[in-house]
Each structure stands twice: as structure tokens, then as C-alpha cells.
Length: 181
Image (cartoon, rainbow, N blue to C red; front, side, top):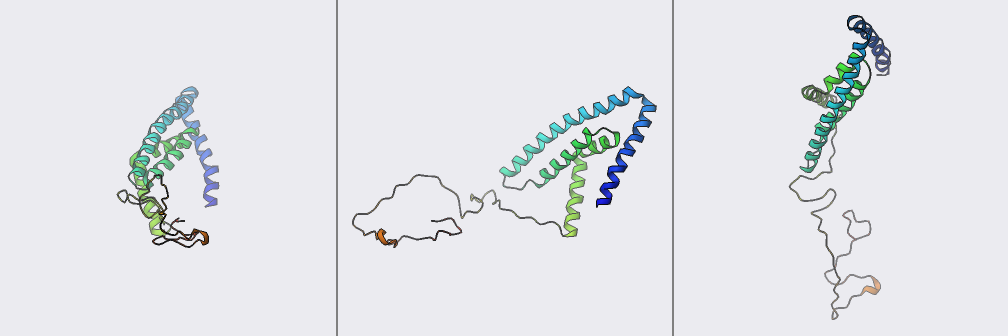
């Protein structure tokens, strides 16, 4: 993996320089520089629009009680695509624009999911309850906020002096996993 990264760090700039030279000869200096700047501006605008859309979809998934896996993957692709678009060069711009196309991201997401599933590297843990359960993560049921006042029956002995429970009173240890005290 390290060798691939090293070759990319050396090979991509060499390829970009070669493409710059060819484009400069064919278009001229200023049109070539203009195209590089234009792709950065257009790419940034597209990135902003798609990024906000992805955040909105992720919020909708979370509100529905679903994990926003597709939206997180899309956000990662948009982040990489934006970085590639801001890097000067025609090859990096082409790759960056490819990552801004939703069907390309869908194909990448399916391929990556299949790859992770086939290699056994994908494990999913969730602490998010189903949307219709009404319970909170880690709790036995719905949480109800309220105020209370302890009413003591004067006729019934309390035995509070030696910490013994009254009749029908449950005592939970301090380290109870359900959080009762």
C-alpha cells in the first residue's frame, strides 16, 4: 500500500505537468490557466450544493432512526472530490468531477460494500433503536420528564434510619446497569 501511495505522489504530478504542457501548446498559456481556475470555481459551487443536500439526507435518515451509511460515504466522496478539484491539474479535476456525479458514487459505494463484505472486514454495531419503538438508546423504554414529591404516610413506619426498604419499595444497587438508584 505504501508503494502505491509513493507512486501516486510521484506519478500524478508528472502526468499533470505533461497534460499542462500539451494543453498549453494547444490552447495557449492564459486559456489553460483560465480553465484550471474555472474548474476550481465550478467544482466548489457543485460541492457546496451537493454537500448541503447530503447533510439534509443524513439528517432525514437519523430522524427516521436509520444509520446514514450512504450519506457518510457520499460525504467522504465529496470531500475527496473537492480536494481533487482544488488541486491544480486536469487529471485531478477530472477525477474530482467524477466523484461529484451521484451515479458514480453509487457504483463506488456498491463496489466498496461488496469488497468489504467479501473480505469480511465489515462489521456494523448500532445503538439506535427502531423508529417506532419509542425507546432511547441504552434505556428500557421511553423517557418521561416530570417533577415528583415524595409523600410519606404518617401511619406506616419508614425504617429510614437503618436503610431498610419500606413495604413495596425496591432497592437497586448503585452500579445497576439500568441506571436505577
